[in-house]
Image (cartoon, rainbow, N blue to C red; front, side, top):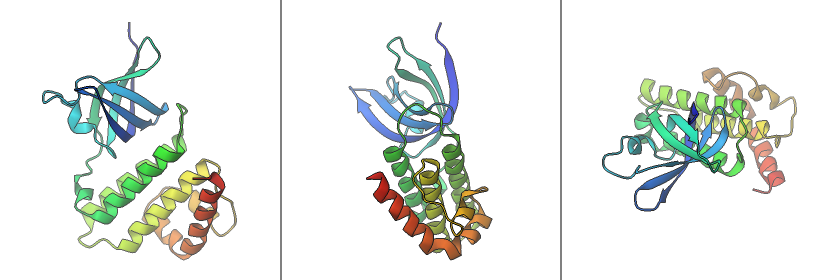
Length: 200
């Protein structure tokens, strides 16, 4: 009897397979990065196709097949990103973070700290989109810089010093944006050095 695994994740990639199936690459809370096939996901009758888009934050049900690959048997949107699509700067941040995860996170190994940080960013951006008629672009940029720096830090690429270390502790929220503002140049410099060190 098949073992069902329930978790949540962020859709990194969507690849058509055959005439009707989809292969999703998902960064999950419990299993790290997994690739799972959805049977008939591109058919009109499929309910899962509405939740299978890149960038989506989803609740997913997986089973392991006999050849040790994943199959996706349940998929639902966890967070509504429709409000972000109306603001290019917010949507760009999500796209950039997901692209970074797609490049940097490899293998089925849980990365809980990274997952929690990305979850905080999604929540914060959705909150900004709902609460503010005019979102400050500088705040959006600072959120992106924080997220990128923390992802690189969790992966072991960031150099530590007293100036930037405070952004690596605590939740990514409005207070963190205020903490980040005077450190912007130093953190960007550290991020660029981390990318150079990673070879990406």
